[in-house]
Every structure is written in structure tokens, then in C-alpha cells.
Image 1 (tube, rainbow, N blue to C red):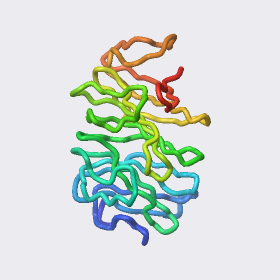
Image 2 (image 1 turned 30 degrees about the horizontal axis):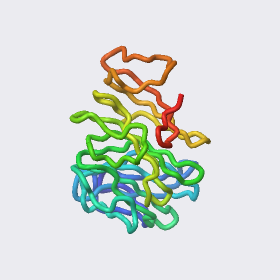
Image 3 (image 1 turned 135 degrees about the vertical axis):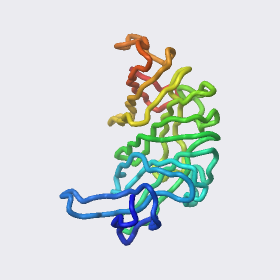
Image 4 (image 1 turned 45 degrees about the vertical axis):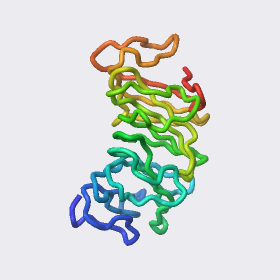
Length: 231
């Protein structure tokens, strides 16, 4: 971004940063909200959604230990080289409803976001962290060392509880960045991405049960309950 980026009076970050977050009205004529995004390290916003109350929820990630977290959230401190960031902004006054880190001891990058009608937040992305926060009974509780692996997580509407979190991948690199995530009416999550793993988990009777090239696309539906992959 530039120093002449138009900011709204309720902007969260007003000092010049490489990235920004903006909300534009339905007709494209009104700047509802605009703020820089970033702090002392290297930070970038990811996906954005609106929650049932009309608040802006956004993923991001970065290395800034001074990312301004709010009280009572899931993870109040940077725990790795670069952690995910999850923020909710009340657009009526620009107040930060919650802001929390999310990650393990290495680099973590949430890239896809969905918020359902009850406010539950589902996040997908990639992680290098062996100790990425995983919930008991998750579909995949460990990752292969020295590879980048996908993850899927569900977080409470106020970002104070981790309801479900699982790795998703095989023994090679698995990527969800730039791909897509959709949460259905029954709460299941459908994730698309690509993988280099010959042993990526597939279900019996799948359309394409084998990896056929240097990297193949995948599509997965997860119930986000313990042992949660379903066809």
C-alpha cells in the first residue's frame, strides 16, 4: 500500500504498512472501513468473512510479537517463527472484538476462512509446526517432520476455545494456500488444495484414489468431529 491510502476514522492501524484491509459498500461507492494491516514484523492479511452480527472476521499471519491481542483469547502470545492471526472487527466503531494468535513453534499460515450462521469459525491453511495445536481424537494428530502440512481447525465465535483441530496431509508437501474452504449447513467442511503426497488419506471408493503427477489436487469433506473424514 502507499502513504496516501484512504483510511476511515476508525482504522485499526494508521501507520503505513505494505498491506491493508478495506470494506466497500454494496454499490461500490462507499468506503465502509479501511485500515493498514501490520506491526513490527512481517504480517499479511488472508481471507475475510462476515459473522452473523455483521462483524468482519479475518485471518492473517506474521512474525510480529506486538500484534495486539485481546484479553481471554485462545493464544495470547506468539509461539513460533510466524503464527496465524485471527481478528474480528466491529465495523460500526472499528473496535477489535477479538484478536488472537494461532499456531505452533515454527511457521503457520492460515489462508482460508469460513464463518457459519452460529458464528463458528473454520480455518484452513498450512503449518511447519510439529506442535501445532491439535485436539484429542482429531482425524490426524501428527505431521511428518520437515514437510509443510495442511490443517483444518474450528474455533469458537469469540476465539476463546479451540473446538477441533487436525493436520491434513501425507508424507510430502500438502498445500491449501490459495485454494478454497466451504462449510455446509450440517457443519461439515469441504477443503480443496494440492498435494505431493503419495500417501495422502483417501476414502474407499474415491473417484481418484492415487496420486498421478508431481502434485495432484485433492478434495476432502470433514465432519470436524473426532475421527471426522467422511465421503
